[in-house]
Image (cartoon, rainbow, N blue to C red; front, side, top):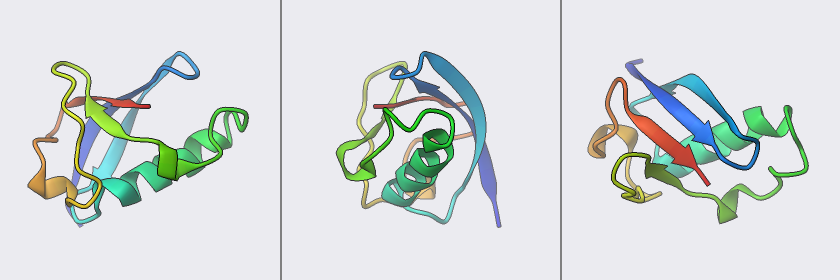
Length: 83
């Protein structure tokens, strides 16, 4: 399974993490996966992944939750926001 390494910034908790994302999952699946991981760190902010989105930190592009990671412009070294 091919993966990419991206920096995920989470403004709700003021932290950033380097995360491997499988290229074969959808953006929505990535959001759910990240939500589950970060929920363990701070459950107060991570309750409903359906209200979250993933966007490019540099240009503000919001990624379509229906697209697979490989279909987006997310590549190794991408800086993303989980909001």
